[in-house]
Length: 360
Image (cartoon, rainbow, N blue to C red):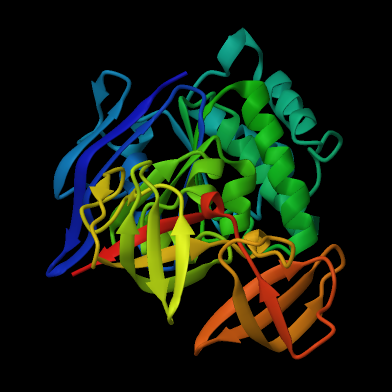
């Protein structure tokens, strides 16, 4: 196993900054995900780890080894690309064995034994003699994963490997990738723009935006305790209510006034413009944004009541997704039943809200 560190890594192309001082610490055997919108820098981060991009500044380390200037073939990384990049003139078995032309199989086994072992691990036993073009997209993805793992790399890098698959197959394969990663206990960095996927597979994740890290944490921390407005709006569906601090309580809670309504919010500090992982004391008069998840809005909660004009209600099986208008602000709620009237009044508990931004 190998831990992985990025220390103030920047990558620039002329006047364009793709990465701006990115620092990360990925632990031994961790499944770590980089998630963010297209063009935010997550793939550039992965390429810097792999050695395909040379940082303009900063360092990349595998354990105690500085690999910033080390070429990709000497970094002991396995990479699964978005398009799988299987060799069409080789069989499945030959594709998996390709990396073993340059390194001995780990564990002292033969090449054939290593190929058979990995194909079984990814549920592709019996496919060694097949041509890649005869496989489905999900099967090709598993072959690409087995090929990346064959030399026994210290670090596994996965660059949106499931983006071309349908939703049901993605869900099945992400569980399989997680199982394989757990069985091999290999340090893994996974890139995706799919927030649900990032929350489902990660031990921890980093939310990337405009070449910078907005927040790092467990899926639960990032979802329940977003530290910036961007994270609150990007990771999962959310309601962002802009208002002004009307009072600060002795226990650290705050009262926020928005649209002539006063809300109680537990926790008077949050990551604000001072950056991720910081805490910013709030004061009366501060202009803030309050984050409230749709599932926190409930007609049975007496605190923090909002009356919404219902604009849409969609039955989604286990819940009804209600879109509403609250004084010109769009609000989304996940309810058990479809509203019976054109308006609905919902509340949320103070502990289910969070201040995520402070504006000048």
